[in-house]
Amino acid sequence: MMSIARALCLSFALPASALAQDLPPLLFPVDCTLGATCFLQQFVDRDPGPGARAFDCGPQSYDGHSGTDIRVADVEAMAQGVSVLAAAGGVVRAVRDGVPDGGTFTAPEGQGCGNGVVLTHPGGWETQYCHLMRGSIAVAQGTRVEAGTPLGLIGFSGATEFPHLEFILRRDGAVIDPFDPGEATACATGAAPLWAEPVVNPGGGILSAGFAPGVPEFGAIRSGTADADRLDAAGPAVVLWAFVHGGRAGDVLQLAITDARGAAFHAQEVTLDRTQAQLFRASGRRVRGAIPPGDYTGTVTLIRDGQVVDSLTVTVPVD
Image 1 (cartoon, rainbow, N blue to C red):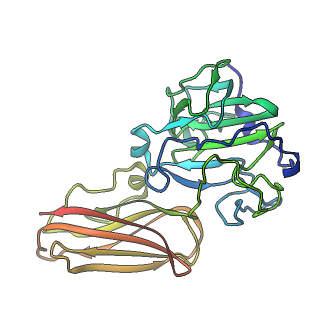
Image 2 (image 1 turned 90 degrees about the vertical axis):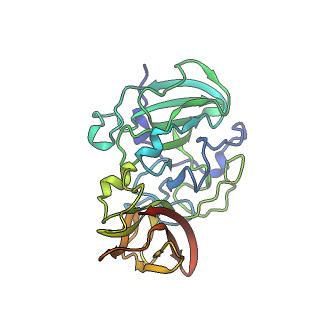
Image 3 (image 1 turned 120 degrees about the horizontal axis):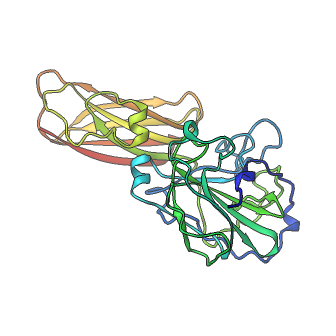
């Protein structure tokens, strides 16, 4: 079984003028609905120095990042099984399976990509698919696959802090950003994306939201177990929480709760003080005595520069 670890140490030197026309437009490599069942988390780092910037010159990257991270909201969503697809037809050059789904703390030395697949394509092109779920690899080394062939499932294996696919595109060993194949050390070059269909980056959004009887632990939110099925009308509290990706300093997060009669129950507006890949906020009201039973509604809205980036509404029965 050939190694696929070299995805973590690559050059970024190929100019757009050197790109051949022998790679067909790329299919989106995850069978999901962007903004609903999957989310664009981070992109190829276009900053040649110690900083980081994404293809659109925004902050959704980190120093030296070589791929596109397509995530699911949490471990619970991962467990439902989200298929990773071949972005183009090719031959399976290498596979790895057997790495546990526990993220960075359980990643074996030298296996940062976790479980994954590498495909070769004509003209020196190569695609790599990292962090797949253990036991989900559906192809074997040496086999030919068509575009859209299921390769495995999004997982939590290797050096990662959240369940996702890291999709890496290379030509002759150099990383190519499918969102902007122009000069690798510049951003917003104007080069046409390599996707078969437009893939729009909203710049962050709301991964999930829910209710709880108190402020939940971040670990529960990341695992997908923080949302209560019901709340007690006698308390102790009604708390609305939101799990956000791509939050930026200055963003405003609004959390509002209405009661079973449609009346305002609680509202808070929070201004984010720093840029973070993922974060959560929670706000609510203590219950003294009892509150009217029925369905309570929570609405979470992420606002940037006065414009709504994303909004999500959830409900919970209170009895």
